[in-house]
Length: 124
Image: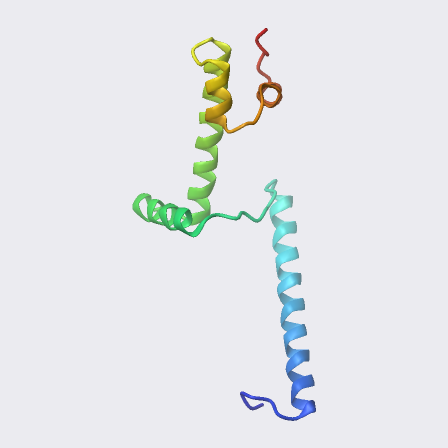
């Protein structure tokens, strides 16, 4: 088939090839997600700024990890950091206003929801 299809028949063939390709990609992706789920891994699509992704790639190279492994590690570190901030707030080491600002929540009630999510007591 030529690079620039000219006849209507060529256009239909090209459209059919594209449809088959997309269907195969969808099937493969679906099977991959199903396999991950069976292994106890829930998959998701992350939107990461290119600049941040480049930094994460570089960190992965330095540490000899895969990009996915590095993203998982960074997420884990972020979750532990957030819990540390919440625990500091409970112990009275971090004022409520600062905890709200640092964690990027809008209100103290959102802070309380985060505490509940972590299973931490809500100070009175």
